[in-house]
Amino acid sequence: FLQFIFPGGKYDPSGESLNTLELNAAVTWKFIQLKYSYAVTDYFGFSKKAFGADSDGSDYIELNANYEFMPSWIANVHVGHQKVKNYDDYDFTDWKVGVTKNFEGGWQAAVAYVDTNADKNFYTICDNGIRCKDTGDSKWLIYVKRTF
Image (cartoon, rainbow, N blue to C red; front, side, top):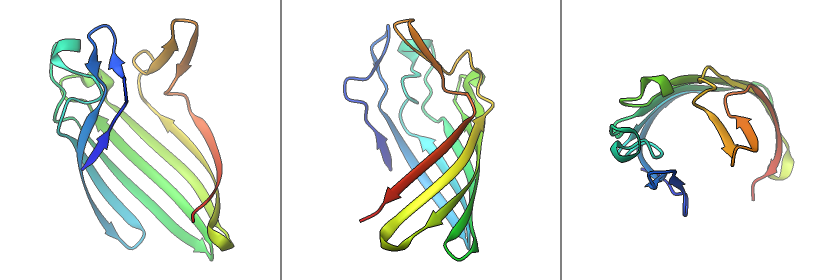
């Protein structure tokens, strides 16, 4: 189970909670993983009160590959599809292509390109109508991290 908790997070104007509980299962073979996620509760505020229909039973299926093509160098590929039950317009597919480099001492650096076909009209977040961010924009991600 995976519980998403957004303290104080509510969908305006209904006040419905954004919290979501998912059941996840995955199968891995060598460097390939197939994962399925199923929303046991309403999906991030998509409720009958907020939108007119429940969304529990929404699901996400993803295929991931992390292939070490040279020692400490890993190619990362991901494709996933979100189905929002009773809200087909919110369904989307997302993908990622990247590379990760592992270093001594638990350090890791990565770069990836991510994109989606999510409808920008549905996946744009605004801060009181002043600043808006399209969460469906393609992006380059770069990170450095250390695991202890």
